[in-house]
Length: 216
Image 1: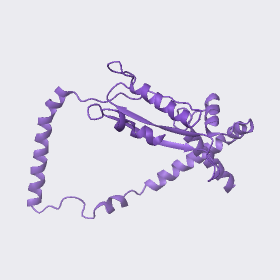
Image 2 (image 1 turned 60 degrees about the vertical axis):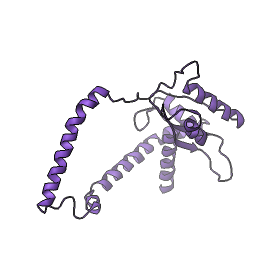
Image 3 (image 1 turned 90 degrees about the horizontal axis):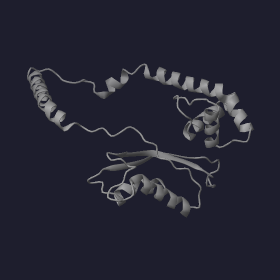
Image 4 (image 1 turned 180 degrees about the vertical axis):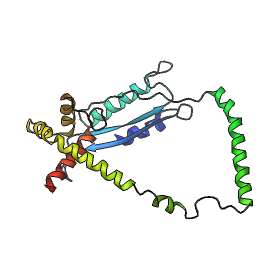
């Protein structure tokens, strides 16, 4: 499915005149054995287009309708049940042509003055840039390790706080990551970033809980 969705624009759309990019950015399949196909998988990604994908032209189906048909056909061929949804995101950003023409000359003059100033400094013998290269810049990131450690500590603490709730959900017979995500949402518990729970977030939560249990 991931390949068919990603290749769809190049194979079936006029991307030279109306660019469309479909990116499958997450594929999560829950399974505990390397030789058994998981019962379910969670696939998600993005569709980037300047056009309204829910609106067709000249009586043709819209891109949304075409993708709906593609996913339905693939599911039928695999005799699989599926849930499929396309949620609108941020609108495409378009440059204002008149404003673009207005600001380009001043920007070009700034670039020319910068080049002239750098050339003059070099002629005076000034060494430009960091003489030690990128290694010196990386060496100054002294606080990064501490920040990452705090983030991991906070995530582990939140997982520990949710352990009793997750155990209760599992005890009720809900054991899949998607089912746990839906139950957490139903109970009014927000995901770490404040939005709804997705299968990936639940998978990370369970991994942290399992790691905590193993260390205990």
